[in-house]
Image (cartoon, rainbow, N blue to C red):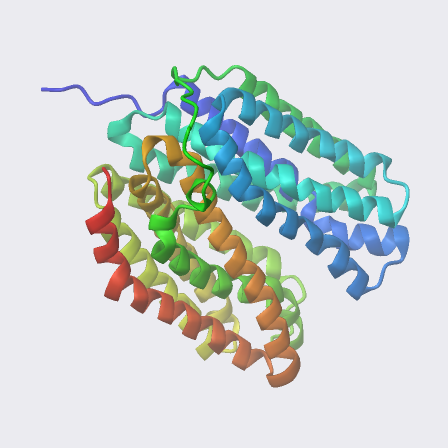
Length: 393
């Protein structure tokens, strides 16, 4: 009987921990930045939104190029370079003395953030045994979820205790530095860098075979963008809840982590399509519940259902992208998935804001559900068969 390959090998654990540090260092400051800009520079809401939105654009622009670099050059060199730039940018928050400089630093930080997430996730795939790759991708996402659920609460707790933003910026700098040091000890499998003599084409930056899967990612990203962006103000204005946002994301993360653990079993058996199918059906029910019930049951019930659904969808879809790509396009596959998600998320923020401003919250949330439902229908009508026909492994 063939012995099962070890999933939690030392290199995988290191990359997993480094990914935790990426999201912990980033998320510990993110919820405090609007307050920081308001208190330090007396910025109004429009200015705060403009300053903080810049990093999303640079992250989106950097992802396709980072996928190309990860596939074309030494994985170790690209990863450590991106991670160092991500780490160094936190020092910029400490030395930025004006709001203009802070806006430049924050916007510039999006590029290494977008790049390091692609490089680190691709490195995780490299150090995973091929027989347990899909399962490992599912567990890898737990590091994101865990950091995202812990870091904002830690940041807010520290701020409430000492009211010193510089201390929080220093903690984020140190956390990113620890992640960089961890990744510096990772031993990557030997990879021969073969110069690509073909002309550089669009397919080197975007996985063309994954276009239909990308549309589904954009659809679910748009839906999530609407809810996650306008959740706090909706809860305050419509439900009278002033402190429910943190609890909503905590409940969401519980659902995400639970479904990733459960879904890892089916991914281990190669049930990729089934995993995504179940996740999409679960999450669309969450968006329907949120749109239907304007009360705490709909509010928190949707969080756990969407979390359970997305926890199945993300690792399954990432495995789909990887399985559609050749071995020298893993970085491109990862960046394509993240780019499509970012596009949907950005559209959700813009369209959700317009809908709320002109026709109200209910219309915005029904729009989120309808777009999600269209994406689910497209998946079952076309994407499943497209993936099965075109998968390489």
